[in-house]
Image (cartoon, rainbow, N blue to C red):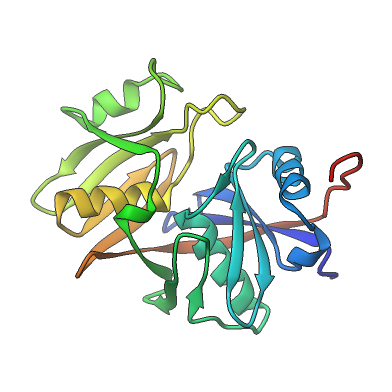
Length: 233
């Protein structure tokens, strides 16, 4: 395996191994220099997000959707941390532009710690029931990134959620979203276990002083050659 490959993983898979949001991880960020090239690679891959690792020792990363560069996102950090550990390069912190996010493994989950103010452009909306969330079209009418959610069991802190980017690219719905889960837990001020998309599971914990932790399972999917980009500089 060469570092000019893209490692595809699924992040926030359910207990039975199903679900999980597909993520592209480019471990050798130097193989894709510059924002335009990375943006085109993310567009060609077509995943909700693709992450480029620029410094494995420091944990410096750069995150893209098919149409935008992000200062912070949850599931790319969890996926990148998992891939690096699988390669024998464990990291304790990942450094996207928004800030330093601690990462660790606990209870079979890969975790990150971040702050709700790092989550930009997302809005949560509560619905009366999980059935109402399930009935929403993809995407629902309106503009802007929507995290639609409802209590499955409020006393237990279990939530049904769906995420709709609504940003004009090919992604109509995110199977699982760590940043939105982080935002919701911070807004509610409590720990949550979230069932999102078709079969994904996310755990979010409020850890105090403005920090929130998000964790989930990661599974390897496939390895692809890095897409070739020409005419972009």
